[in-house]
Each structure stands twice: as structure tokens, then as C-alpha cells.
Length: 311
Ligand SMILES: Nc1ncnc2c1ncn2[C@@H]1O[C@H](COP(=O)(O)OP(=O)(O)OP(=O)(O)O)[C@@H](O)[C@H]1O
Ligand SMILES: [Mg+2]
Image (cartoon, rainbow, N blue to C red; front, side, top):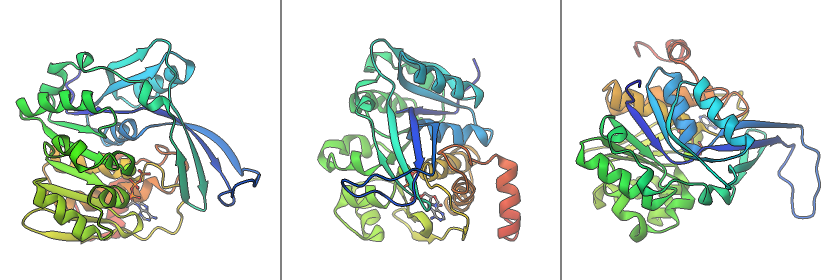
């Protein structure tokens, strides 16, 4: 088996995506501009972002025993994401998310099957995590996450957490044992607000660092990112993109590129965030979470144009 550097524990989902002229109001019926389906899921997208950039990534999680599940597995294989520990669960349905994209903005309705199609703590392979460098997760299934983090900690594997707002709404006391094991937590603006009750990213990040998380990186959409450690805090603006088609998966792409740059290549936080901003800038110019995810050469070309002496 290929050596896996970055293991992702979490979700893989089929995205049904309709481009719409505007978001419909209650009782309104509108015509979609297009109807598409794509492979998605926060953790799965993240692993594909890593693999496109040449990183060796593998997925721990589950699909149902249906054709959507088969399609998601096929796409992992095409993208070179290892599926040794992807489990197909009998009599469960693969989750489908419904995504509406209007003028580059999106709303997402998440499938309830997200919570029923899952692996159990006993399904976790200790050596798969122990032999990797980084474990990345969304904490979607908490018991399994706790077990995986325990293995990572015991084996000096770094821990990275994407904190979405639905998970953050479980409340600090319910997820603190997980968050405090992280080496880096990457919430978006909503996630940071939900976990700290602070509307200001600077303040929210400070709260999280004070509680004991070593690195907090809050993604701020078109405003780039905010890096916070106990020693410094800095906003890294992103690039001006005038052709924004779909921001679905922008955060996943950012996180994947950041992980590769910081944890595998060993670049500093700032350079890693600029690289990750560039990756997300390329992603948002295509429809679908993964379509626009760049390879290394594409980021190289983009940054050569945008910045002096990046590489
Ligand atoms: N409108 C935009 N213009 C330029 N860059 C953007 C824009 N939206 C997102 N990005 C890039 O993507 C990164 C992540 O975006 P965002 O904070 O929206 O993540 P997110 O809400 O987690 O997205 P998702 O969950 O859909 O992946 C940003 O830090 C930035 O680099
Ligand atoms: Mg996100």
C-alpha cells in the first residue's frame, strides 16, 4: 500500500447543484439555469485538494450501498485518494446535499443521511493513522473522532480540524475535548462565531488560542484569512477574482493546500496561507466543489503572475 501522509476522517457526499437566478422565497417556483451533480463532502473535497497537489491522502468514512456510493468511490480512485478504509454500509443511503448557486453565492441543504451513514470506533485502523503525518477531520461523528484523535496523539500525528458552524453549534463544552487536541483549527467566519459567540474574527481567534489551541486560522471568504497564534495575529488578504462562479468547496481547497504547504512542505504560516488563498482563488472560478481545484503547476502560474518571488 502507498504511504499515506494525510488522513481525512469525515464525510463524502453527492452534491446536486442547481444554478439559479436568485434564491427562491417561500411559495416561489423558479427555473434553474443548470442542473448538475458532483462528488463532494467537506473531508472528501479536502483530500482531493491535497491529492491534486501531489500529496498522498486517504479517507476514513462511509458511503451507503447504492449507486451514489459507487460513484463517490470511483472518483476517489480517479483522484488518487486512498480508499482502503472507506466502508460501504449495507441498508444505508449515501448522503446527498442540495446546493443552490446564485451569482457566485451558495446555500446548502445537508442530507440527514450524513449522520446515519457512518463508521464505528472499532472500524478505525490504528496503524493507518499512526503511520501518517496529519489527521484532518470535521468532527461530524464525534465518538469515532475521539478514538481517531486519541490514536493520533499517542503517535505524534498532527491534528487539523475544520470547524463548520453546524458542528460549532454543539457548543464549546460538548466539543472542547476534541478541539483542545488540535494542532490547528480552521473555522470559517460562521464557525468561529458559533463556537465563541464573538462576531469579530480577531476576538474569536484570541478566545480560542487562550483556551489552548496553538494555531487558529479563520477563513474569511473574499477577505482572505486571519492567522492567530499566541505570538502573533495577522490577516492575509486574498486575490481579487472577478470571475467567481461557485464558492462551494473554497474552504476545503484552502485547507487542503494549507495542510500540504504547512505540515508536509514545512513552509511558514504566512506563506502557506498565501499558497492556500491562491488554490481557493482558482477553485471558485468553476462550478462544483472539486472542478476548479488546481494542481501545483496551476498555482505556480497563478502566483508567478500575482506575486514577486513567491517560489
Ligand atoms: N468571494 C471570494 N473571493 C476570493 N476568494 C474567496 C472568495 N470566497 C472564498 N474565497 C477563498 O476561499 C477561502 C475559504 O472561503 P470561505 O471562508 O468562504 O470558506 P468556507 O465558508 O469554509 O467555504 P466552503 O465551506 O464552501 O468550502 C477564503 O479564505 C479565500 O481564500
Ligand atoms: Mg468550509
